[in-house]
Amino acid sequence: MARAFPSMFRRHAICGKKRINVASRTHTKTAKAFKPYDLNVYLLDKNSETTPSPAHELKLVQAGLGKRTISIAMDMTHSEFSSILYEAFPKMEGLSGGWMLYKATGGCGIRRLNVIPPDSEGYTGSQIKSASASGKTMLYVIPLQEELDLNPLPNDAREFRKMPKATCQMCNKSMPLQVLALHIQVCKSKDSTSSNEETEVQFISESNLDEMKQENFPSESVLPCPICQVKFPVDSLELHASLCGEQNLLESPDHSTFMHNGDSCFADDTTGKSSSGQVLCLEDLLELLAGRVNAENQFLICVSRDNLLERGLKQWQRQKKGNPANQLKITFIGEAGVDSGALRKEFLTEMISGIEKRLFLGQRAKSPQYSNSDLDNGLFRTAGEIFAVSLAQGGPAPCFMREWCYIYLTTGEVDVTRICKDDVDDVEYSLLFAKVEEATDLTDFTDEIISCGYTGALNVEQKDAIIRAIVLHATFRVTPMLGELRKGLQLYGLLDILKEHPSLCKSLFVPGEDCTPDADYILSNVAPEMSERGTSRASEESKIINYFQDFLQEIECGGGLCIVLYCTLL
Image (cartoon, rainbow, N blue to C red):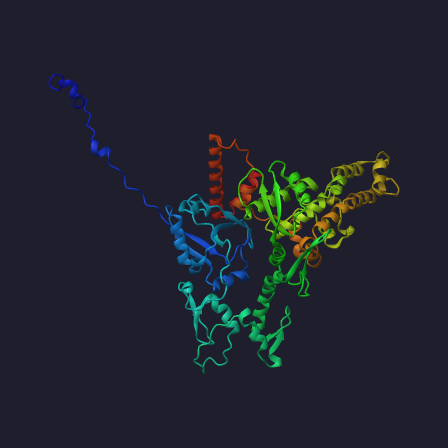
């Protein structure tokens, strides 16, 4: 054929085209290696719903737990990731009850922890990178069913091999900095220059507390602890007092029995001490409430997601086999799954938000809505029980009440000196305020003014007195609703704690100053209207939301640009 039609088979040569080398087509590029990144992980000693306090962090570090920095690759499997964790935390090798990763919410201080569900193959490198924003966010490793030992490790433990060390100037012993912080307060070396003996690290804990109580000291060198009234040496009293309150809080739930009657559920402390006498900070209060939850029994709520608030309130009131003092367990009708804490948090979050919109009026700080039907149906009392359960079992705080409402909850009385026109949230009375202020003849509003309890003269000179009467009437008429809330807050003895520590608990009920928003806060308040699940549009919209979240996290790491973005979104 080539001889018969030479021009056809030599066409490429005539046109000046170069024959393509077939071998070059089959050449494959070498796969690009994944670049590892550093990730900060934090191991807790037990299943917890909040990040540890600074005092508890020091205990975790001394026990070989706490924060570590590990290297993660994108193609890492679950078994490889577990091996790295076991290398960083040797105490995890004995865990047989499982563990999961958690992520803290935005903000500072003690924060709530949200679970990171594993993929079908467990925790992989790509999932960890997405959850941690490429290592910028710390992840918490939490045991599910076991508690790790918190006894301090010896100075030569392998958990401390990478930690910097220093020498105690009193006993000349080298030890990690975290251990040295407590050692220098209890070291009893009298003459470090004349004695070459090494003294062991001493910790004020349960193991040597009895020994210190029995040890004899000169009367002028000992002082009583302000919490437990046990005498200790002056040089170790400060350390003991800092740990005494937290130890008593951890021990108090074991000595409490839960009782329930027709009106309230409360804890009877058999030690004879006040139930809230050891509350030193807000974290102590939440731990005290959590310790009063009866985890041996359950308070089962089976509810549909449709009309969740109304159905949730009814099912809460209809439960006869258990009471709210027990561990709350949630089941959503038509959904398979076991409530390990996530469903309970979701239910409590939706209920608190729904109660705020359903039973309260106002913008940022609110007061109860005047509704005798809701009062008669017991909804306000049920709302008080839900508030107490939410605080005790890891849900959000009902931080939306006006200050005068919180004062009534703590004292049972209305402080009229702290009530003004701005505290009235009812639109009807707000319109009446405007009418009275603008009117030149008040006779047109005689019936409305008299119905508010005003008995003075109706003239322009008495406008201030008339407005004051309207304010008092508008606030006093909702006190029965607050009274029912107080009955619900008797759960776990929360009402007694509010009475003893009103200033400490105020931030749980009264909104304070606006905090600087972060990426998580912005995303949690964004409510996009998504397409139907399963469609191609819904998939694209989900990708857009994920890209938007990554963008927020990136500018958050760069500075305070999230504030500007948040204001733009509003």
